[in-house]
Length: 451
Ligand SMILES: [Ca+2]
Image 1 (tube, helix red, strand yellow):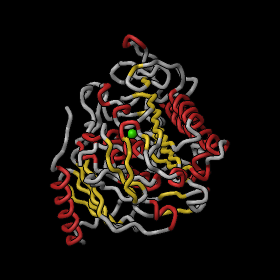
Image 2 (spheres, protein in one colour; image 1 turned 90 degrees about the vertical axis):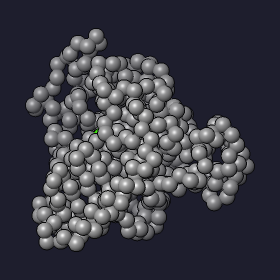
Image 3 (cartoon, protein in one colour; image 1 turned 135 degrees about the horizontal axis):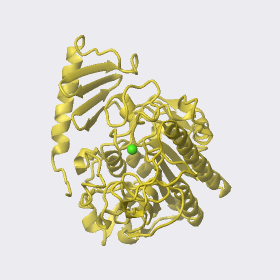
Image 4 (tube, rainbow, N blue to C red; image 1 turned 60 degrees about the vertical axis):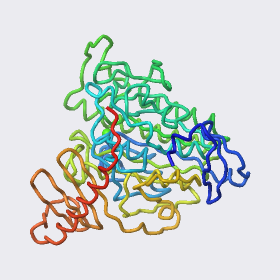
């Protein structure tokens, strides 16, 4: 069934195992019992940008204070083996939004401001926002989009009822001008300038959204900019000025100071979001998930992991992640399950009691049983591909192909990827290479690229 083709029609949509009729284009459901409505917990998905495995207090940072993220981990579940789908922004976001490997929708690289202004994720792709909207959720995104510049690719066209933020990879935190010199601050499909420090605006709109929608099921997606460059704290001057003029750019120690502040201001905002949920008495019916979209650059920390953003070493994609849901997720849990960003789609749909449209094959798996009942995830093989690098993960084993080099690591014994076992374990190398080759063939079938 083509989901989008039927958006203006009455379609059959399975809710909680029962087929009910949903009027899809208004997101209002017909025939749901009041009991079903109480079963729709709120969802808040908060994502940092370029935050590394060693950039958060509860992941061992001594330099950066993140009391609010740490409190979520203490009161919920901390992931030691959570990964973004890609070591850079746009592909990770495409996978997160669609619940599928980003290779399937053709967003394999960064949608850059200068060269890819006309590119974006095809509207035919089904996003988690669309599935939740079908289930009667009000959906909001405040912050970074980065899977298409032109208004035709706007979040409003991909299931989000409300959008305020930017569509490029990064904006000046104060002037909101993107890397190519364009003003980039939107309200839905129109550019609407707004004064303020980017991180604080994202928090402010998030809180406002929760307050306005406290009496109905909501899904709030908060993709933060921090700590992506430009490195600017609240009181720092703009780097990008109107008319293409340049301001002063942070250097050396200023970057270190600003980076710390950027993460800490985001953490403060997360605290305010959680406080809002608590104040409104929504804590036990709100699932909160926090993660990063890829590893840190050299200005941040990936802890003991090798590599940085942009590479398939663990430091490029193993990132902090925390899930919080009092009464459902046991406080103080630490999980070593291997999880990918694309798993959140199936998880959020499951939490909401929504079923993705028939015929849509998700690559991600539902984490709900793992989160709330300590169930194991099924064994699976996971794949990454970015530029000339490829990686395969199966249990503790990781195959890493970098140009002509073949590397095999046992991450249980060697998380820093120092001891290449490719020569001593040729059978494992062969097995993972075969699985990779089958996966590459499979995902490249039917790729939809809009360019
Ligand atoms: Ca990023």
